[in-house]
Image (cartoon, rainbow, N blue to C red; front, side, top):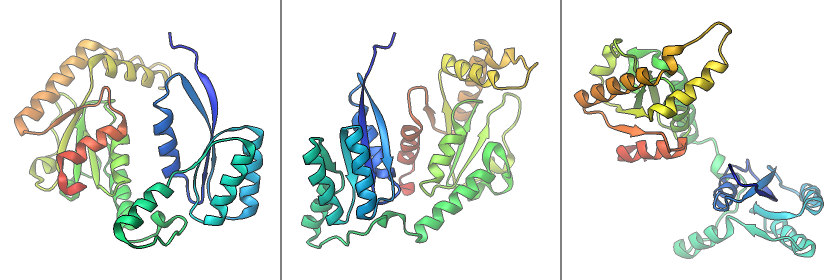
Length: 273
């Protein structure tokens, strides 16, 4: 039985999308397992009126305040009002920016949303996402050699979400299901450019995920073999043998998040960093 958790309010204020702040807040909150953060996210906060509305919300539900506001006047206003309300506030970016300024000997430009400019990297990510969606579940095998990464795996090993996560980093990713008795596309066997990686998990984990999958299928679908542990064990045995023959690395995703799986894949191919 999971012990009961204590709840606290976590206010996240950003002058951009808030993605950086949300990640930082959740990473910190995850270190306190007996507490659960109630997140209040305020993106695109860029003027005094908006800040005032946010501060009213904080006053109504006091808690920890984290912010990424590059406009000094607005940041100072948040700090001042939080002190008056008696709630802790921290600028997540300021210590990092100060470190950069000290090392580089140059002041920052302090532009809101500077990491989201539509430059060449941005369009590379869009291209990677389009490629990845077009090549989900073994589709469009003719141009597998244009992929940076090809993910293999039996059903329910997180191939698609991992592919999309990699694509968001600008990595063109295709994924192909491994099905016993069904040969992989010949174009994959001929490809020389992509890193080919196989994702696996424990029999129990795959069976559990597949059971949840069946609950959402149409009435009348039984899928006994689909969740049978003996059948899954044979599928995994076939996948391992296939990878051994071709020298493809294997990553066990049983206890990995999508982010951790993606990091392990990138580490296998330094040029993808």
